[in-house]
Length: 561
Image 1 (cartoon, rainbow, N blue to C red):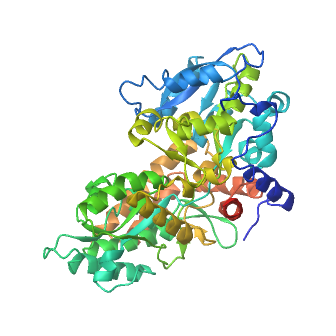
Image 2 (cartoon, rainbow, N blue to C red; image 1 turned 90 degrees about the vertical axis):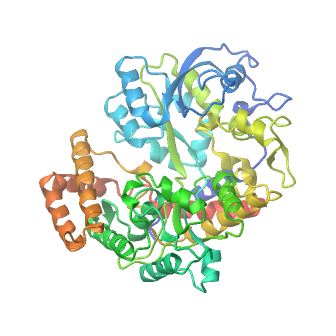
């Protein structure tokens, strides 16, 4: 396994020191608190408060009566307890590119820009819209500077091609983002084992479709759901490592058309075996398949479980209400003719914000970044106020006291905490402590979370290409258009081959895809990635780096127990 340059013993020790900070308060001027446990304000310290501006994602999730995402109890709390007066600008979560482009073009972009999209942040760098932060952090930061010293990967990920640091971010817990569920009660009823290979997966799916696993005497079940769209489609992509750009066994960049062909052949086998809804192509987002699964009519399905506590509270609770005897099992991805892979993981080194080059008071922006970096601040937006939204549970960690009040006042506030490295809290920052085992569905959710972690956090190749998408480079603008057109056209060819029968085979789809790739500028795109790889492969954070971080985090969690 390739080891990243940062993974040296002194840095491991630094990570350990950071995680072992635990639930104790950080020391130093930047972390001073009042007697009530609230971070001291600039006014408390005798500093002059200044005005700055910041974006905030608008997900349309603020409940009625709570104000807007720009003006609510939490924006007021920030302005009462933080070092600056912050004016917020709402940015629609799924339309941030359009909104931010307009703001920058009009010269009205806020000082601090929060944006998960790596490509969009890269665009603003290319346009020289961003402020380099090296000197600002060195001279005016306490909290974030300390975080960089503990986790130098943050500097590695936030540094651009000119060698300067432009992005700030957070350290996240490493865990699987997707789960492949199977109805374990159906396996037991039909005396079957969980599939280990693609051939076994087809056989199990066929049994689930034909052998009445729900016992109602009606042929109304399917072996698998969401074949082409949604999370099951992602599972199949991971199974075959069917990505546009991969690294082969020789460590060289290669185009993933051969893996895409293999994935299409497998989907065609499932389709022709009759184990999937024949109308799967009309289920554009996989929503119908998920609903069928929650109604007890599908035996295997992929599910985005980045928030396992949320999954337990919502979807798992719905399934167990609709089908009281249902029991889920998380299974590893079956081995395929092109290899054995695992699912994508959460990105542990996530860059989330940049500073506008036109910011009038960068020092105040930096102090605000420090304020948001503090554990005491991030905890507020995760759990709410102690005594009002949570109490300390038996395990020493926050326990929500009123779920309705929490949902109404806190559940939608997470985007104010995009600089919150929650593992700095120690054990209370880990997902495993978020479940309330006194609630049966939460206890079951915890079991599934542990199962997913044990199954998917391995040294198998992650079926998501080179690295997490947030660490991939952005193609030049003209090539982005070419790539989008190629992805659409070639994707349509392979989709057509799944249902094409003798009129249009997967082999023909591959030939057509190769021709389309060459005629559509694919060779130039491939050459660009190869050039990038030759220059950056030793500096890039990759899946095996993240696996080492995972192992370190688990060791620290075990020690904190």
